[in-house]
Length: 255
Image (cartoon, rainbow, N blue to C red; front, side, top):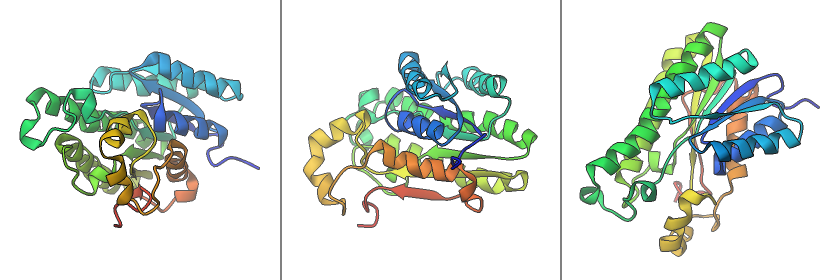
């Protein structure tokens, strides 16, 4: 039986841990050659090592996702290594606690914290898409999946810049999907709910019972469950899907 991504080359940012790592492992299992990228190169290499252990083809790349030259080099290195770029998962992102804004309301965010959040979670996605779209247009098509969030669909208290960035990711996704449909490039986003990763640790410590009370499944999701949606969107099984944002959230947004 062939895998969903047999013969394809994939690039995954934010692949050192969490959703990015789980997706990289699944992509490799489904037959893709994978480039794993992250600012944390040790984590990216660890992910690559896990793929190599099961016989997958992989390279690890260090990238600061807000730097245009590094992002362009990330995409170029992937193409140099594997000859093409069929699938991209733009997943690199940060949470409020990583910019010193944990628990802060809108007027309490510092300008530096706001700017860093937008730079990583929104501009970084655009920079990656810019290089990926150029390559895919030249080769005759491809599939891009961006990590948005339930925060791209609803408001979340004490998450102003994160919410703004993720709403922006969904807007970028929709616009690029329309623009590049003639080039046979599909662009979609995935909107995770509360997933068991480092990024949700502090929120769950502060408001875990409250969050679970508003999640119909009454549990957190796993990185592997997000990876399954990303893999399907990246594959040819989703050949008529573009401009869509799929929430994988245990019913949170439906409540």
